[in-house]
Length: 388
Image (cartoon, rainbow, N blue to C red):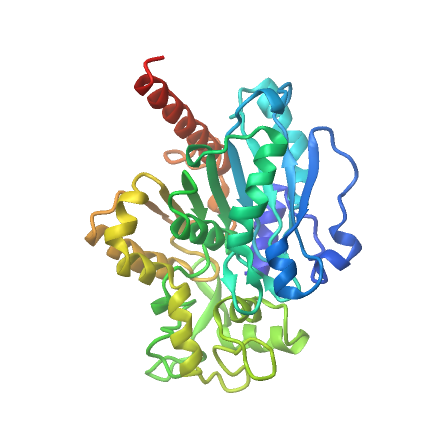
């Protein structure tokens, strides 16, 4: 969600401010001023170019480990996906501090790749979509192989790790679940709704209206601490008044919905009345992560063993914890080993703050350390099997 992502980005010192809504046609998406060890990596995607009928690029900011000749080392990769309103420019803001920490404080040595998910229709989530195009397929079959070749990165699942916050949290989890043999693990933080039985307070499958529940009570969306400060209706209508595309809820429509007769994404709900369109709601099932896991657990369960890590505050600013609780109940029933942490009292932004038991140095160092440890275990086990 926009406001929470900006808030957390200010805390992390990663976001640059102005969202790049015009995407690759806007000057704000050009590479920022040079930062040593931070590079722009982009390719023209044949798949996306064919879909759109014009040249389309996939972009990332790459933070190189200091002192390493990437062409001589097999380096594991952390693929990081920003939230709504961010971009790959996070790499330039984070890069200098990351490289200093790797050099002076033993911070985990990884190739830190900040993917760009910004798009005119919002955040494309790296999901294959009838409106946005085949972003997931293009990332895994075109972009990542070329990046690995360029930087000498590990070209194996055990060295490919995913993380992201908010819309990026949903994206990273979606990629891990849809490409379970391609990636070696995901650390998803405060993901957008992972179960559409609680899509920011809406049961997409049973509610008739997105603004009021079946008892007629108005549905709240934004809170500060334990206090509700904005209703879903107010948020959605204010966003729609600013623009009828590119906002957070329009972004969801662009990813999850079928295409309407006028060529635009179908809306899950009417912005004026809140009425939910039943055809659109049924089409959303394809992108319901919890439903995907339930329906395909016999196949996915073994492939995802040890790979799922999801962190959420119990007081998420946009009430995203409800969907995660539903998914956790399902995964527990299926005897999954997924690590799902619901952190008491934390919200969408302060989830990253140091926690005395869970992550005393902060959540991002905890995640990056876990990624590096996973790779070290993988290489040790591989060497043991080979008798090295």
